[in-house]
Image (tube, rainbow, N blue to C red; front, side):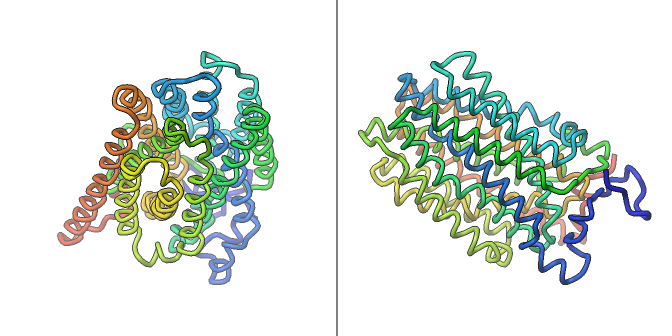
Length: 428
């Protein structure tokens, strides 16, 4: 374990950082602030995120596998998809403890190894039952661990005024695999069976574990309230978390039901949607990351979530025949929305709270995604079209959450109050 600086008291929430990361932390000097983007630490983080994205994105084709191989109903597909989110949600109270005990680097390695084991085991599953459900639970836990460790490292490396760009780029490395992995998985599944696609996802997770071995140490001295999930801090933070949950519901509905929806319309391949979605999202994140910070995080999130909902409803209204064009607009909204929401969460947060908040945000996102089980049951009775329209309307309406938070912030400033970190994380 690396030593604390002499002036930093123990157990006060200060970061304990390795020399590798101290060299590029914001605030050291102007040169370090400019080189963070090309630092070995950030580049390695991008590599691990790419491996994570490939492994996770391969399972976007799991609903198609269930429908084609096991004739699964919408309710069964929703249940299997939702179990992943349920496991991730229940892991939230333990994430801080896991990452604190193992350290961010070792936690990331452990998460990737568990992801790999689950992916290889999926290649042997021959039906919908307890074995498949157990694997989805373990996948949800593993993905949550990797996500929490990664987000905390990104927020530590990036300068505060570049946090939106850093979140966008780190997510882009994972997002790029949303086009590559489903395209490969769909081809492998059609030619040789989905077991080979899942095994390849396991190989990607093993590569993520290998890349994680070179990440710097980033241990935290956690404050008592950093482990508490009962007191969600600050009205602005609550509003962003609520918007994140609704966005997660919309995303999971699209990922779970697009392929079965297309199959019911005689469309066998959905890779066009994932490719156009990924190209658009990457364009926004790579070329428009700085624009997000200039336009304003809250305004970007508000516009993004509105467009996100419109596109989801459009899938139900226009049908899967237009999935390529809808996928492109969906990608534009997604590419702007998620980095803005994550940056809004972390921009005023103390270092000791980053891992805890990363776990909480992932849990809230998974809580929204868990609703796919309910929407699957609804689709059994109404069809997929109405589900897409209903969910799209709910997501678009969530823009009000962000607008309300903005008005509350202005009112507080008008009364001469400052929304400091102490207000977001009041001392106990």
